[in-house]
Length: 220
Image 1 (cartoon, one colour):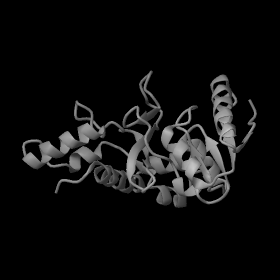
Image 2 (spheres, rainbow, N blue to C red):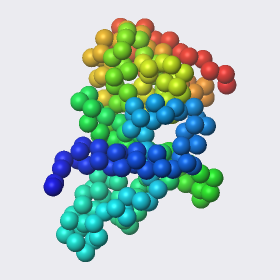
Image 3 (cartoon, helix red, strand yellow):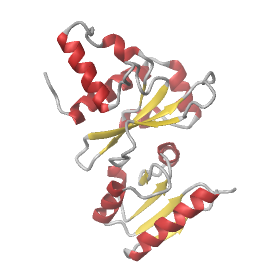
Image 4 (cartoon, one colour):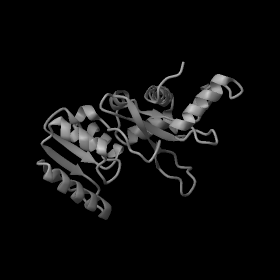
């Protein structure tokens, strides 16, 4: 049956999640980053290892050709037919209604070709919010640059954390913060030039909206 894109992405996320649970290498990587099994289950974290293509109908069948075309359009498959997130831990990003709108991928393994990007998304448009439920848990939140930074705070017992997918505030994150009743934002960006500039810019914007903004000062 034909499904909409959020449902298609949700099905892919579920497949990658099942793949992760059977992938000792990927589970070991997450453990090394402090990501617990509970967090893996709560956020539908997965792993892409080329097995998705093997489970799809063959291209000589209409259903297979159509499904692969839709997966290419969504960004899951590249024009070559290869999986976009091959070799990546995958983490879904959702909208306010809980629908998957974006997937973040983090390459793992030690045999990566020089120049291979470690961080991947479905597209440049960083739609959605990571952990929107966490933003609604209280009057303050922690705001990090990336999803794995946010996962670190989650692993340390701080559920009210989200991220910006970089050093700029995306529109979806901006809206969720504005609508959540958050009064204080703790910015946990890297202590480097890019992180400092991004933190200052976001702090000014949020302060102008009446929020209290503080910076978590990590060692350089």
